[in-house]
Image (cartoon, rainbow, N blue to C red; front, side, top):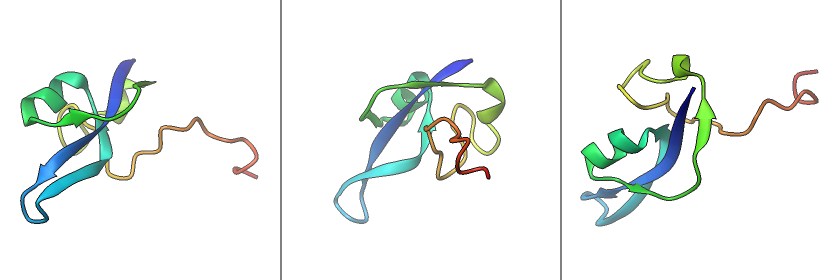
Length: 71
């Protein structure tokens, strides 16, 4: 299990911060010069690094699965 955080990065094209749809480890965010913007969640290590080392895939949903949505 690994902690991942929501984060934002400076978007030079729009001259402002943009929140990422990915979540990442604290170390990865620091290496990229990003800024943590929320509390971490613990995820299984298999959810990290599929596309980018230390990050979840795009559109990561930190909420636990809702059994009622799965019906």
